[in-house]
Amino acid sequence: MIGKTLKNYVVEDLLGKGGMGAVYRARDTNLERNVAIKVLAPELASQPELQRRFLQEAKAASAVNHPAIAQIYEIEHEGDLTFIVMEYVDGSTVRQLVSRGELDVLSAVEIGIQVADAVARAHGAGIVHRDLKSDNIMVTRDGHPKVLDFGLAKLQTVASADADATQALSLHMTQAGTVLGTIAYMSPEQARGQKVDHRTDVFSLGVVLYEMSTGKLPFTGPSAFDTMHAIVFAESPPLTTVRAGLPYGLQRVVERCLRKDPQERYQNLSETAADLKRVKREIESGVESGPPMLERVRLPKTLLPKNLSTRGAVVIGFWGIVLTSLLLTVLANKGGFAGAMPFLVMGVIVYGHVRGRRRRMAKRFIKKAAKLKEVQVVGMEGDEFIVASRGTKASTHVKLNSLLEAANGGLYYGHAFKMTVRSDVPAEELQSMPSRLSVHFVREE
Image (tube, rainbow, N blue to C red; front, side, top):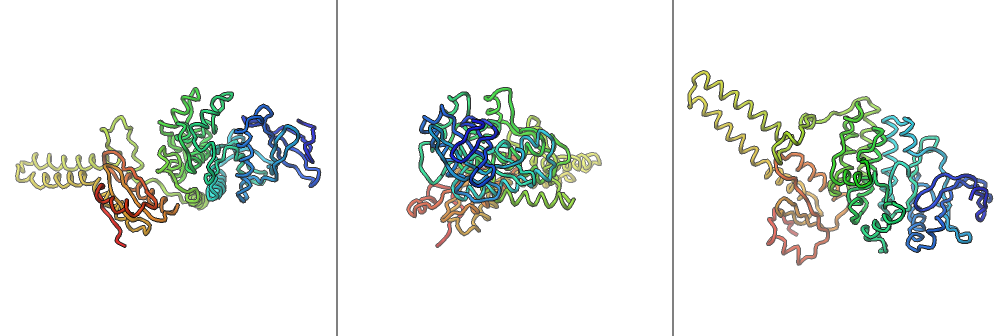
């Protein structure tokens, strides 16, 4: 292709190749500017599904106007070739910057802010990138990131043949070993071949943030299967154990992005960007917040009784030592049973506190969820909160997930709470919910 002319574009250099085709730098002879041209591989052009996906890239990206998203100029055909003409970004990919050790923490956070804001804009237009990775984020010479390649984007508002992600995953795994999305950046639901939504981009951004901060990927394995298994089941090592001195606030953001359950991640990348901005201010001010005391204690799960949290182990251990020490002191001084009685009563009180913790955290969640005006009913079914809401906004999901995270963070033992949010439940079903759920809140109209 180098040296050839496509329409009014003279191909000058090869920039890269992928499963969908090749990208070249070309010269626009009409406007006298450099452009990037993505050419669909000829052997794939005859496959309608792949050509449709390729053209969808242009439609998806051109539907979003943001300075951190590479601009699409036009779609063209030349003989048997189909190609997209895009903005040429002169710079380096995030992967290249990481491999050369050119990213400090502040730069990584700034890139994360701009990318989160850009992809949030795409989500607002109903577009999911689905292939967000360090190779798809370019940083210009003057330090501005650009998100590239919406080739795997999904227009959520349009029913299409690839709405079933399992079918699409199977299709791509049979083609020269490629997989829908790049394996190391996949979300657990992508790795499982399940249907995905905007929260898959939240997970992938978490992987990119982890990579920019530590220079390593959070999930790896000797084979593609092992990597996908790690994504689905393994927890990533905390940032600070891989690279010392990283802000705790950044670790909190990355951990939340990398939650296995999509409902436990950020529900809106605008919120991710806001949290990253707080981390940036802390770094610039030199005053960084540390983790809460109970979160500084990390006990290996193998040392904990089943279903006992670190918080629970610390609380129970503390009171156990205090009460045992006081009781032994009384007995050693021959205080007898009567002298030990106050401490036995205190022990019963502590036991009641620990045992009732789960119930109190559930009540706290319900009380705060009831304050959201969209929420109509809050009930429980086992360990799961059932929330029925009306006119639910993205911000409502964000608040509910924040409340759920706080409730689970306060547990001493037992399985974590789960939550299902039902939007715009029909009036008949809404009325029947109290009869089949353990209902704790019903909004009276």
